[in-house]
Length: 154
View 1 (cartoon, rainbow, N blue to C red):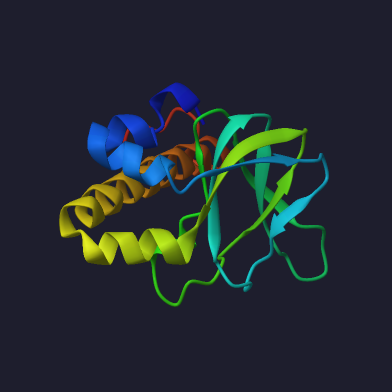
View 2 (view 1 turned 135 degrees about the vertical axis):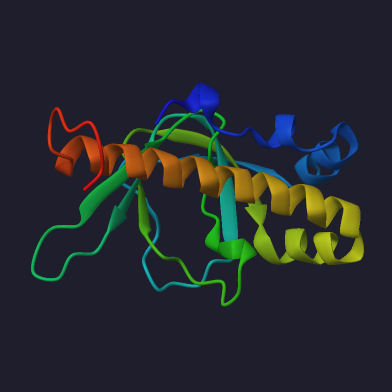
């Protein structure tokens, strides 16, 4: 994924809303090899990567977890915190040392409920991230499985 095309939180939110959200941020260092979350776990936090790489993966029964995507500078790690039932749909691991902003999901959701304009901004940002990742996934799937030279869909 091209991080420069990924919807950035601070560019997607109004300046006031971005500042309010960043007031909830906690700077964290995550050592290489650390699992941030597992599929099915409670989605109670999310991160914005400052430096380093986090890999999203998916459990495959009887096999090693399948790498889905690498997230880098300025990218959102985790969106399941925003949508009920607040359960991770993938796993995530730091593949390099990572510095990130960590957010308490309950506090952010509460702030969004209390301020509908902020909630709308955050929902639009998370939606933009999801739409971008779906487009990227579709492109990767076409690269892997589409017949080469096919000019039209069958």
